[in-house]
Length: 175
Image 1 (spheres, helix red, strand yellow):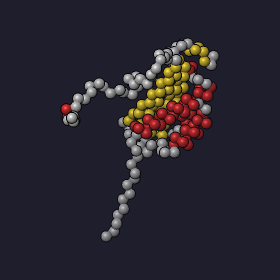
Image 2 (cartoon, helix red, strand yellow):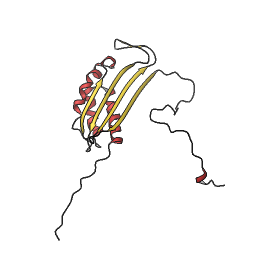
Image 3 (cartoon, rainbow, N blue to C red):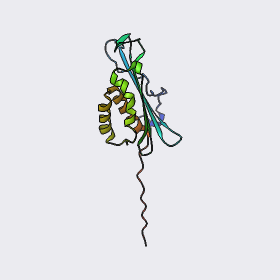
Image 4 (spheres, helix red, strand yellow):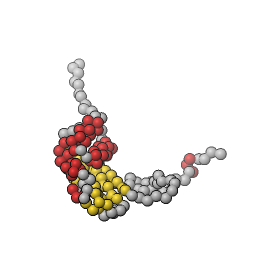
């Protein structure tokens, strides 16, 4: 017996959106949340034709902890970083800003990472960008958390900014 595709019922359940906890990967015995990392990136088209890509990373414990001589209450971030880049139509980074919540920086390297934004303007996001720039960026800032955030921001940029169009060359041929 075949089913006529025009008579199939479509599910009325809404599709899960990014960040939804609708998908459960857990199977097996009960478990208790101990640590959470939230990494969120968003891409915006600006009125001037450029794009802003923003990323935020936050780490949270579910119990009070003492990290680096600092007491952190359960549910409060003990690490918080943000990276924003502005990209033009050629996929060139025109501006970059890094913010690190110094109160919650995971290490001295993370605290110094705010200056890392100066390395990115002028860099073009192409096939070699991730390999070359990210490696140099990681060595320079010595903050693996910012490197992780950079990778996510660049992936978001690739999804947000249309591929550059090849230049059109016009050739006039004399008859």
